[in-house]
Image (cartoon, rainbow, N blue to C red; front, side):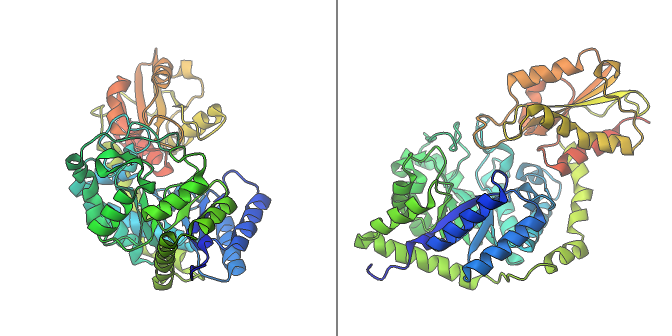
Length: 490
């Protein structure tokens, strides 16, 4: 076929350990490897199980592969047993933000490699410009292009410095959208001049990143009403030609609602636009077949050859060793990186503080801790709500506080309110019903506090004493608990 290497190498299959049985995962691996895919993206799983799986995959494949995961908030974001880290928004407000970003990048890279993940799908370089954006918010380092570029560069350099492959995303910027691209196609109405701010963090970081990911967002001012993933004017004219990026360019997940139902045909469009890696298609075989048909046209075949070259160069240049089993974890412990976040987390939790302290609070007074959330990721919600409060409770009990499960008996009440961005949820802040529920739990209390696990901008709508702990990661909930202990009276 005009000397074109197997186009299946340009397809990245998904493995949902968070949703599928081990038999389903293994069947998916066998079928994908038989087709000749270039790698996998892993969602969920225990650390030991993920390590066993990636070892088996590589043995069965007998060739280099990209094995990736979304690890924007540490390897523990996906892999249980590894470190959950503060979100970028929290790192950015730390007094030594650059050091925090570097520690996060290095720790994420080391832990990813320790379980066989060599492709870290991070960092997010989108600007936090739109308060109603349902999907970015705390995933961003902020709204200032220079700061986002600088912190993103530190994160990337640290992660790549230990041998992992990073991915600058979501080019040319997802921060201005008011819709979630998991659900439908967002269109950004901003003009080309305004969009220079969105592009600035990528200009600063692309020279350091091994791969880039394009957003499923339309930018008419950049020459297309189609998703940027499928737009030659974005991927080739700007990312390739203007910025000179010559690493592999990945699509965002092709199963997302911003892509037409026929995402196999869209995969050919993405290749023609300049993308190299087709990530998480709904049907991997249909996508491979569509690409095979597409490369019968000489111009598309030429693009496929270039994409294959970039992928092979990346895999050849990567210093990732498959036998990383004990090295990375030992080095993590020796370096003290994990404990480094223990000392930073308290400062992160207290930087946005609407209370000025907790006057009158006492550890000896009966205190209740209630979790509320409308996050759709965890079901049933009642279970999630209970889990939300346990980490704060642990910290209070460790300090000798009197905790009661009976809300009406508690003079002091704490509501842990989750408001995090996630795909398909539709909003990143707390819904009106959840805010109402939080306030109802606090009625009648002598002293009350909301611990917001979400963006600081939502403190204003809660309307009761609140602190911001930024996200539902364990490290942030623990930070909130420690803040309460250190601020209240004895």
